[in-house]
Length: 377
Image (cartoon, rainbow, N blue to C red):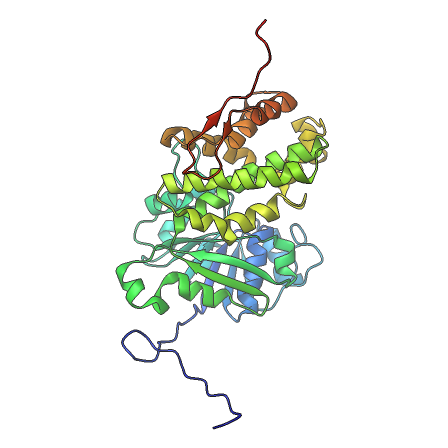
């Protein structure tokens, strides 16, 4: 058949045509902030019946009437198919999958509230980032402890909420652990089904089985972004930021590997991608906080004095605590922690960071060189 293209359907290893992955038809998005609203817009645009829960009934009613979220994404019209509600039972009723988009420090409380409304076996994807303070738990461990019997994963990547809601081309990673059955029939795995559910012409999900690597990347990148902001605010430029991003990614790799994740995951969307985005724009609250602090603005006066939750500020404590527990050196995160929570002076702390002993960059090159400190007095 000269001149004609013949498409041969791909086959499975057993020679049979692949089974089609089925998207979820109804999901619940728990959290009516900017990112939760943006994810609800993506799911609804993909044709999924989407229930969006928030604590404030007044905001839910406003969204239902105007098809906008004036508090978090003003000026953006939301697609039909989103059902805003402040009734948690109604949001979870009939949901085939749940996206959890509440702040990390409220996650345990939120999962306890969900428990009586959610049948066993419903997949839960974390769309918040962090490590629980005190326990050192990754957020998936918190959900597993409070909601046993549910597959737990994460959706993460370089994603500013406003751009996502506006339909700018965006990519993210959907990660769930793969059980034996998921590897035999990957089209039925929660990661595959959720990725298919969220795919639109603008939103492109990728599938991963390395939940630990994805979670570590999401938690650590917020702390590194504060460091980049601090140095930018202090007057330094692209060389400094590139160094912090690159070495910060190495800290992410080391912690992920120590916890059982894969170093290569950190070079993907949920690691390098998210890190680069967050460290490159004051649209990120983490970068913005660091920039203001680097300019000498007192913490209580940042963001024009408005109370603003900055995940990296909270994560600096939990990330450093966990790294110390498992014996991983994270000098950039340690510097941010010292400045934010121990009153360390910003300039001197970063000077000390830059004067640490010289190390070999490949892990196989075991070398440490101590800088010359001048003649002894």
